[in-house]
Image (tube, rainbow over all chains, first blue to last red; front, side, top):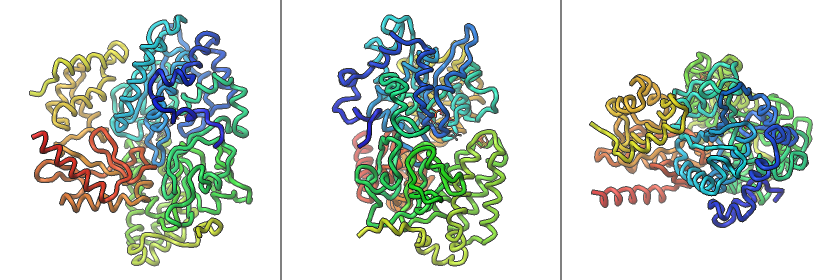
Length: 450
Length: 166
Ligand SMILES: Cc1cc2nc3c(=O)[nH]c(=O)nc-3n(C[C@H](O)[C@H](O)[C@H](O)COP(=O)(O)O)c2cc1C
Ligand code: SF4
């Protein structure tokens, strides 16, 4: 197992409790930051660490923090994005459920750095029991002087409140999240203004992912430079991956981003290989929005180099032959799975989750869902495949928020890499309905189980 | 008419205090959760009007929110609601079969409630449990790694609980 910065202590008996967490070295970063560092110095350390947002877009966190406006007399807010609704992603839940104090610790330091005296955790409504775990941890932190007024006698005041959503993927988009926090429908806002200038209640606001904010703890403890030494290139630190689909050992893994995709899927330390003695067919490495890759392009890049589990390597080849790190939701398909059907479930998901403000997204997602269902049911035409391609292109880039792109990309990649499987659903309609899988030639020829 | 108990009113007041002065509308989502839990598992027009009054906002502001989010039920639902995820990762692990099995066993289709008012079957989109698929949400908790046997025992458990509470 590589270096563990976030989950190292997650398995310690009783770590959810403050005393145990503290005994294991918890809340040291709050002491260090509040007593010996200024907000500006903390932002510098985060910049040096090279930390990139773990919510999906990978934007450098230190830079994002430096954009926050500081108008005289206007409160600022930090909001933790715990909406986690991208299919394939369940890493934030794991962190909050098993080591909640790590997030609270990161939030206190980050709130200090950003000047947020009232910080919110926006958590998806379905994670009701996780919200209770967090509220309990907040209560303990407060009882021990790490939250509330005049924390550790430094004069810094901070409260953290948990705000439960109510079922809407779109509320993970930061401006929709802010609308939802204000008690409204989750309709994304047109940017600019950016939240760092006018966010929640028109006040300067920073929205960051759970994992991003937890990573502030090791950055403060180690120092930004030391943190940046872990990993490779612009993929510094560790990354939580939530692995699922047809693998032997689904779950959440903390990786340092130097391991190969092959090692991640096949080694017993991580996914343990493909389940049920089958072969690997395809993988969506970063949550439902990112391009699906067939086994050959997943394990090696188009140039024939080993593909690694980091931001640069996963996107090597662009959308033509690469994918993205995204949210770290790693979805594996075995040789018997049907790409058309899988793509259909995603199209249905995005249609369900579109907020409906923009016509290309509202109409396009529903249209793609219908066409994909038709193909999946053996009632499609070859021209439907071209129509799908056309629709996704007209959605991409033409909407207020990136949900439109997120809906378009999986369809585009599925057609790009698995076109003959789509065609097969038309030319072999009866067979396609009877046996729910496509073509064997995509299966990985190297890792053949005995 | 439905009204919150003193204890719940105090909770609502506490929640409002989490947000800036005059921004009590921000408490709408959490308060609707409490209302739904308190008044039979769904939000009637009457309940929504009551929440509007409590938060000093117009009823339409409550309706537009209640209709946007999938967790708010705008119609009565069964005492036990099985919300079974059907998105990609769950599908890859056989959620279709689980949904069909529950439907058969209870004699209802997704979206329907059993005649005795005990069970509602609903399909859901990704609930963030992809590694523990197939799964469903039942009340405030997740039931994961579902098999037919597990479904049987969950239904049994619900029936027993319902009897015990009668
Ligand atoms: C449709 C949509 C859904 C999103 N869902 C999430 C989410 O569930 N969690 C998350 O952290 N970021 C999500 N994001 C990204 C956020 O908008 C934002 O970039 C992120 O919270 C910033 O945090 P980070 O810089 O720490 O990654 C989503 C974006 C879009 C467009
Ligand atoms: S792209 Fe879709 S989800 Fe985003 S604002 Fe437009 S309609 Fe809403």
